[in-house]
Image 1 (cartoon, rainbow, N blue to C red):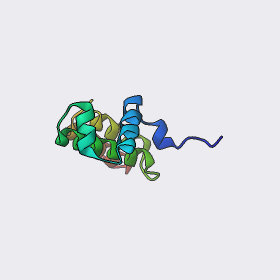
Image 2 (image 1 turned 60 degrees about the vertical axis):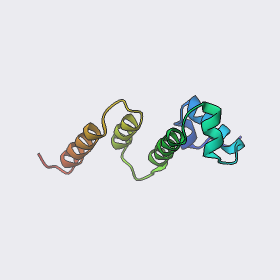
Image 3 (image 1 turned 135 degrees about the vertical axis):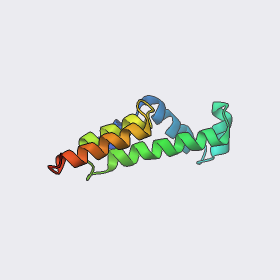
Length: 98
């Protein structure tokens, strides 16, 4: 059996379920909104966040620490502003600057 792609492994079960429903509805965001009982913009936001999770996970050039910070921000566990500050400080310190 082929090894599962790392981007799939990085997703939570609810993300996989969302993707399955999205595919089965032929990509209809309106249908997904009806299934979940939410508005179209809510589904669009969820899809955008899912796309960002996949990009972060799939980004081979991305530093592991930076990926973790971005994922925390996407999961709303830290603010986007805090993520930007942490990433900027990390980049500054990894270049030997103080």
